[in-house]
Amino acid sequence: EAGVAQSPRYKIIEKRQSVAFWCNPISGHATLYWYQQILGQGPKLLIQFQNNGVVDDSQLPKDRFSAERLKGVDSTLKIQPAKLEDSAVYLCASSLLTASGANVLTFGAGSRLTVL
Amino acid sequence: AQSVTQPDIHITVSEGASLELRCNYSYGATPYLFWYVQSPGQGLQLLLKYFSGDTLVQGIKGFEAEFKRSQSSFNLRKPSVHWSDAAEYFCAGGGNEKLTFGTGTRLTIIP
Image 1 (cartoon, each protein chain N blue to C red):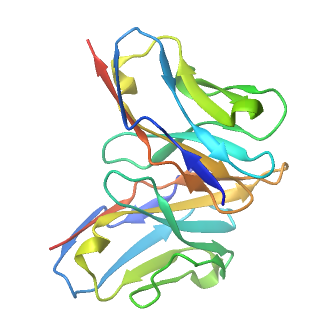
Image 2 (image 1 turned 120 degrees about the vertical axis):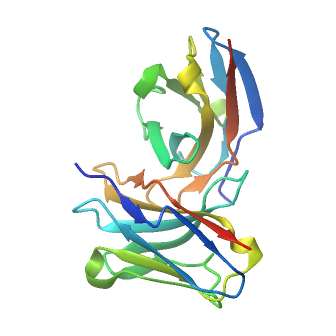
C-alpha cells in the first residue's frame, strides 16, 4: 500500500511569513495526526482528526497554527505568522483502529521547516 | 500524567555487539507501547508494538522488546547490531488515546 505522503519536504521562510504543509494519509485510515518534532526532542502531537472532525487540538498554538481536513482525507497545516521557534519537522501520521482498540500510526517522511 | 521516559540520550555500541535501549512508562493501566526508529531525514518507522499477552514481542530488523510491569519498563534489545542500525529510537505509549513519545535515544555504531 502507498504510504503517508507529505509536501513540501523542506521549506525555508522568514519570521512572520506564512507556510502550509499538506498531507495525504493512507487510503482508508480514518484518523490523521500532525506532530511537531523539534531538533533533539520526541514528536509532540499538535492535532488529531477522526475523519474530518477534531479529536484533540489541546497542544496546537491556535493563535498562529491552523489545520483542516476537508472531506476526511487530505489535511493541511498552516502557520501564520511563523516564529523562529516554529523551526521543526512537521510529521503527519494516519492510523487504523485495531481489533484491540489501539491506534497504530504510520508516519510520513515529514516536512522540515526552517524559520530565519 | 501519562509519560514515557528514555533515560539514555546517546548510546555507542560496537558493530556485532548486543544492544539494549531503555524505556520507562507511567500509566495507570496497561498501556499500549511502541518502539519507532527514525533515520536521518526520514519519518518514523514502527519496529514493534505491545498491546497485551506475551510480554516478549518480536519486531522487524531483528529487534525485540520485553514488557515488565513490575519495573514499568519496555526495553528494546537486539543481540547483534549492524552499522545500518545507527539511528534515533523512540519509545511511545498510548494507543487508543494520545500517543506520547519519549525524547529519543541516538544510537551510534562503531566498527
